[in-house]
Image (cartoon, rainbow, N blue to C red; front, side, top):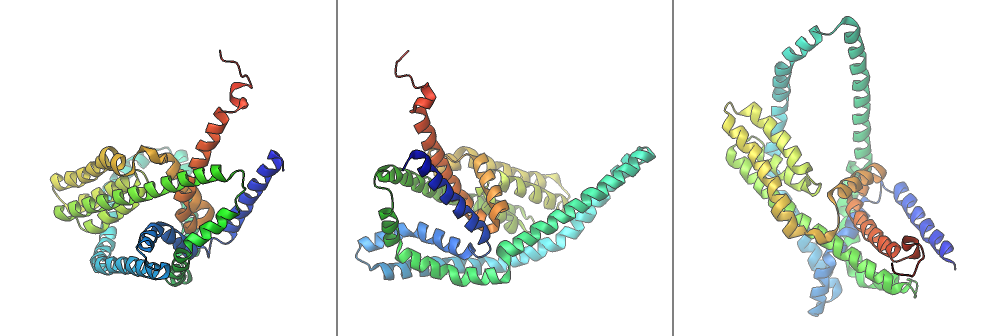
Length: 356
């Protein structure tokens, strides 16, 4: 088989896989979640297996501990967050009204200074943009509902994910050995090297970024609660958990937290403290947490991660968001490998073997 035919074979396979994922994205969520769970718990199962614990028993113990700890955290946090959600829902109408009363005089002065033709054109433009915005919001909500948060998908996520995770984790070594036997003999060392690089990149990023999110969640939640910000625990945990998207956690927390503080406090000191909490968290993440816990060797640029998350969500819904970071790691490793091969090829040096 020539190089061109092999390239067409692999490209065709990737295209078929992408089409299948797109067509089946509405039902893939529990399977993807179960696969990711099995992937990250496999090292624990291997360690127990080294201590002569049968693989099936080790899998059952690990998954029971994993899901019981998750359920325990949810049961512990849900009563606290429930009250905070209700409190935030009660704050929103008052915040909107306060913002309207503050902005209305300025808008009235601006409108009074506009000529009649410009005012009519402004009203038309505002109406058009409002209609487009409402249509976009409706589309997003419909996509989210159909892509991952419908009742059927929630039930399947709760029921199917543990089952998928159990069977994949139990048979992980058998599955990887079977797939390894299908690899082309000549290219097996190269494929093994790239798979090890992908595994190292993905594990380091997820493990490090999860630690960063946990530390930031604690800092934000404790800091805002000590200040006395209403719904501070909810805002802090939310900002910390979405910090895996670069700069989004601190930016969203800063906007929401300062907005609530402006409405709640009559003095400037608590408002400034709330802003400083998020600025401190972002500075700590950029200069201490990310370099130490994630490191530069991962090779996933923040812009690349943001693009991958947005592209995955746009193409495959919530399933695409779960697959975004793994696919970004895979593509990043393969691109670096392709570039290294290109720099060693005659295409780069013009086919000349003579040194200058």
